[in-house]
Structures are given as C-alpha cells and as structure tokens.
Amino acid sequence: MLKPGETPLADWRAIWNGAAVRLDPASQAVVAESAAAVGRILAGGEAIYGINTGFGKLAAVRIEDGDLATLQRNLVLSHAAGVGAPSPTPVARLMMALKLASLAQGASGVRPATVELLERMIALDLIPVVPGQGSVGASGDLAPLAHMTAAMIGVGEIEVGGVRLPADRALAEAGLAPLELGPKEGLALLNGTQFSTANALAGLFEAERLFRSALVTGALSTEAARGSDTPFDPRIHALRRQPGQIEAAQALRELMAGSAIRASHLKDDERVQDPYCLRCQPQVMGAALDVLRQAASTLAFEANGVSDNPLIFAGNTNGGGDVALSGGNFHAEPVAFAADMIALAICEIGSIAERRIAMLVDPALSGLPAFLTPKPGLNSGFMIPQVTAAALVSENKQLAHPASVDSIPTSANQEDHVSMAAHGARRLLAMTRNLEGVVAVELLAAAQGCDFHRPLASSAALEGVRERLRAVVPTLDHDRHFAPDIAAAARLVGEGALAFPHLPGVA
Image (tube, rainbow, N blue to C red; front, side, top):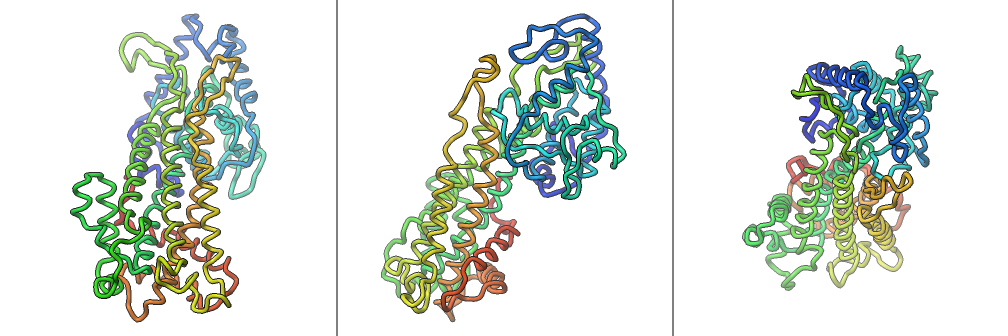
C-alpha cells in the first residue's frame, strides 16, 4: 500500500525491485478537494501562475479561460524535449510511483481521474519511454516528466512487456483513454523532482547491495593475505565513536569468526601491521555507510514530499480560503547533494577494494604466488583482471565529481540557479555497474588466494561464499579465457549472493 507522505524507504526499494503499487484510497478525498479548489480559484478571476498564465519568463502573460486546456497540452508537448538513451524501465516506473505519491497528497490541484490513470498505467506495466537527458534539476525534472505526461495524453511511446508502442495505441489496447488535461494538471505532472529522486534511489539501493558485498570480499581478501583481525577489535572502534565504523568492524569480525586461516596468522606470521587496504576497512567502509545513510535520510524525505509549483491549499481542507502559493520546492538541491554523497561512497568502496586486489597479486605484500597463479611467468594469472579493476575505479573517480557545485541559468535567466540533480543521480547506476565489476574481480582474486592455503579453511560464512563461486568458476590453475570468469562472478554479485541481509545497510 502506497501511503502518500508516509512511505518507508523499504517500500520504495520494493517498488524498484518490481513490487506492485496500490495507492491508499484514503487519498481520494483530498485529491478531489484540491481539484475543486483550483476551480474556485479560477472562478475568482485571479491570475495564478501556471493555471491561467504562461510559464517561466512568460509568467506575466495572462491566458484566457477558453485556452486553459490548450495551455496545459502545449506545456507538455513543448517540454517533452529530452534526448539520449531511454531511462531504464525500473527507473521510469519508480519515477511514476513517486509522482503518484506526490499528487495524491492533495496539494497539486489535479483531478482524481488523473491520479487514477497514472496508477492504472503502473499496474498494467505501461511505462512511458523517457529520454534520460534534458533536466537540470530545477524547475523540476521538466523534460523527463513531460515525456511521462505526454504518454498519458497519448503522445510519444510506451513500453509494454519490453515492446515499445505508440502511446495512443498502448493505452487503447489496455482499455485506457488518453488524458484530457485540466487546469494546472500539465504543470503539476511536469514540475517536481521525481526523475532525479528515482535515479538517486536506484543508485542508493544498488550501492547498499554492493557495500554489503564488498564487506564480504574484503573479509575474504583479508583471509587470502592471512591478515590480522586485530584491527577489527571493538575496543578500537568504540573509542572513535563513528557508528558506521563500529558496525563495519563488527561485520568483518563476524564474517571471519571461526576461521582456521585467521588462526594460523597468530602462530607464525612476523608482520606487525597489515596494509591500509586491510587494516582500515572499518574506517573506510564505515564512513561510506554513514554517508549512504545520510543520503538515504534525505531521499526518504524527498520521496514523501510534494515538489511541484504552485501548491494548492484548499480552504475546506486547511481552513481559511483557497490559495495557490508559488515557491521553489521543485529545486532539487537536496537530491543533488544526496546523489553526490552516494557517488563518493561508491567510488571509495571500489577504490579500497581495488587496492586489496593489487595487494593480493603482489607477492611482496601478500606472500602469495605472483599474480595468484601457481606458475607465474608461463601464466599471467590475475595480472590483467587487476588492471580491469583499476580501469573501473578510475572511471568512477571521474564520474564522482560533484554535480551539485555546477549551475547554469535557464529560461532567459528567470531560472538562474539550478541543481544538476538529474545527471548527478543518473550517473549512479553506471557507477554501481563499475563497482560490481571491481567486487567481482576481488571475489575471484580472494577466493584464488584462499585456495593456496588449503587444507586450511576460512569461516563458515566465507566458505559458503567460496562454494557458491566455485560452483560456477573453478580454481585458476593455468591461464584461460578470463572474461567469462569475471562475468560469472559479477552475476553472483548482481544476484545479491554476497549481500547477506544481516550485514549493515542504509535503512
């Protein structure tokens, strides 16, 4: 049940993963009253932005009553100016659900029939084709949301079961009539941060899965290098008081508990301290966890908020007279900051994981055969997989440059400061795909390193992970075509095989 204004992050995650969307019917009354308030405001003859005026720099142009429907339709068609590859279908669907929850709070002035059509489209998996580029994150995600709205009025394309159809045909085949926009409705559907927020949430959910996976591969790499678990002692982390660090250290301790490999370190290892990539895992991963949680808090507020403009306050609902208030809730600066925080966390999770891979292939640091192959020289082993991980990490470093520090004036300088939240959020899925590749390479390298310690075994948890991997990727005893091994390991990571639910998460 989608409860407008009160939907927990876990429910948005479920929708991202394909869960059904059903709006709380209790919202119908406030939606109807909001639409009625728009009618009463128009009857009063007052000029209200976006209802009976032009848009942006044209806000001073008064629109006659007979042209109000045309005004809204023109707005949608003119603003559907996005370019680039279509947004992933799950992102577009999540965007629709976010918009549904926003409209259903009764502050946007749309009719119940408009909300119902959006809900029906989600239920029937009629997902508008939404180009990914064209929003600067204020005045809302205009272009992407215009493409969504265009599909609702029968213009553009809709994806149905993986097939792209003309929007009017897709609606007709589903038994739905195209929407005839009423006053304010085009603007209400276009204005808002739902595209940026959907992309940011998708990045957050994928980052959480990979954070948990990287805790596991980090513990396995520590085992492969016969590293010490002393740096994970709870007394160390209690003194620093950083919550994420404390939880990350506990997770690493639990993952390694009962390991015979770890116990062997205590007997005959002369090393005093491990490299930072092993020793400082709680500090780095814990900081990433704290940042992801802060971003999650911001996005949870945004997902439950109303971010279009102007906002309608119905007198019968709020007390007093009907009023339309113009503000700036469409400015996506909170989402931009959250997206930048997620990007930094993704980057650093991958950066320290790549350093562990580099450590494992270096015999001077790991004590293992060079490049993790039994016969180095004749075989190159993990030489180039480490290079691949380095390439992915470097790409993520470039992508992690903050988007929120940029701005460019639009709409003839009426909209003179913008957030750049849309592309700041849109890059996150690409970054998580890169991180998935890094974690997959570390999984392979760490398991290979542990193979050299046989018959010593790791902990039950980590041995379970190795068994999952070895069921699809055998030990590398001589050079072979490596790409399929990485692809198989990446599938395991992508399926969440390493992301144990008991490990720390964002919510």
